[in-house]
Image (tube, rainbow, N blue to C red):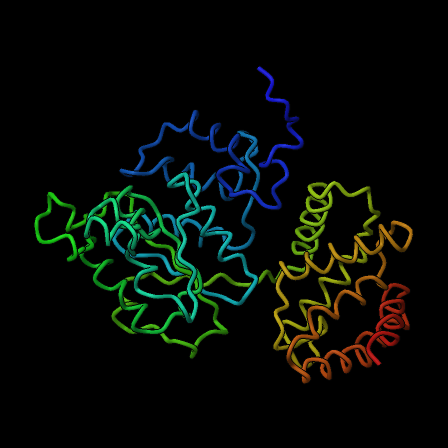
Amino acid sequence: MSTGTSPSSSPANQAVRLAPEARYADELARLLAADTDARPTGWKLSPRAVRRFILGDEKQQVSRKFYGDDPLVDRAIVTLMGHQGLMLVGEPGTAKSLLSELLAAAISGDSGLTVQGTAGTTEDHIKYSWNYALLLAEGPSQRALVPSPLYQAMRAGQLVRFEEITRCPPEIQDVLISLMSDKQLMIPELGRDETDGARLYAQRGFNIIATANLRDRGVHEMSSALKRRFNFETVKPIRDHDFEVELVMAQLKRELASGGESPVEVPRDVVALLVTTFQELRAGQTQDGTAIKGLDAVMSTAEAVNVAYAAALQARHFNGGKLTAREIAGQLQGVVLKDSTDDVKRVRHYFDTVVRERGKRDAQWKTFHEAARALWQ
């Protein structure tokens, strides 16, 4: 039966970004059909199938989605089977949120139960709130209660994601302590009778995946009591140059294809130049071991993909359809020119010394230096 809407114009196909459980629905279905291993109570897939979903499996035509530390993925899965929550920490842009989404999609079938940590996050955002029209009309009742994502996860036995937890004030963070220890939530407004829903018991399968940026340390430090409820895993930047080049190339081609863009010629040596620049400014050291001043700005792989994508769009629509170092230099401004004047000075010094010297021996680096001089002076 036709609905009069073509597949290409359906809301899902027009979405800028689908949740992983929707984007990789076919892969999840294949993994489920072939999954013969034991599953923890409340899990959609077995631990091995969850691992295959995240790290890929060619035999089952499952793509790799997280690149970096494979043993970290194994440890994260094991943590979520236990009583401790999982805390993913690291520099911005190291795919902490992506990994938490993938884990939630594979284990619970829903990555959307999320609490976003901010300075304005309240206890209501973590526990529950009320529909005040119904509250005034009927008094406290289950119908008037508005469950938070964490409440829903406890009730359904699913994972809940807590993004940027250190952005929350300490007293709000500490609301989690008793919830994670007792695995139950009291609703005193409903009285004391459990039959009226005054006490919510977490079902098996419930757990919390939290994320925090290392650069946010000192914003709102977690209490020792709360830290004890989590196992901490650090997601580190990619250090292998060739591997990061291949990753940026693959992600760039995927972004261009999903955006419906006309073909853009993407030379590998231009992407390699971009990755080299990011790795050196990230580490504060050149490939030959010379010390330079690193940047305060985020120089992650994800940011490198964003720069490459913007540069490719510029090349496609304005500069003949071939990505060059000139477009890379122009788009790099958006990464560095944010709020640190020191970063601008450091980048200029990097171009005046490292890039300039390489430009004497390599045409791409020469183009990179010349474009930067015109843009950054």
